[in-house]
Length: 142
Image (cartoon, rainbow, N blue to C red; front, side):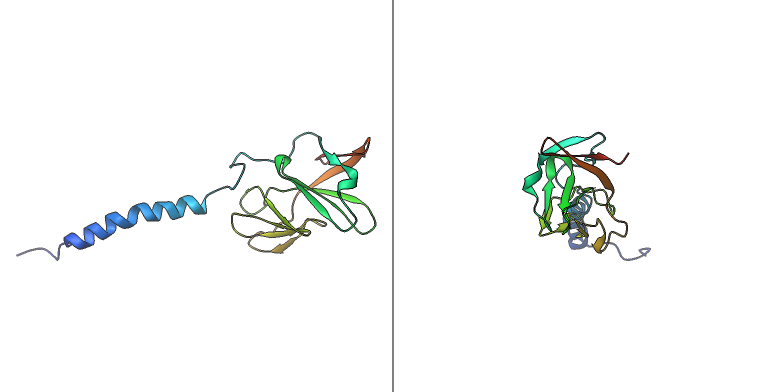
């Protein structure tokens, strides 16, 4: 007498077919976006662009350096790391003054660095920013 029901051929084949698909889902969820998991904010000051590129109330994303620079309505510049505080993904999309993380959809205000949509709960890391010879220079806060 058999100890219990055995798996049918169909059940085994379904399980074998689903395993690679499940692996793809895991890979997609753990993707770090452009720049990979080693992407990071600048560790030293970097020259980004011409100061006149950023109008009052606007922002510019510098993907190559993982930095966003904005200018508030008074004309003051602010800079933030664009490494998402939720899972460390480099943010690669700026819509108006809203940064959108490609990994899990967190959104941040580029003028204040604050989270405007979860899953992130911590604001972006502020960077020091100045102008030198008409160019924007940003880096770690001193």
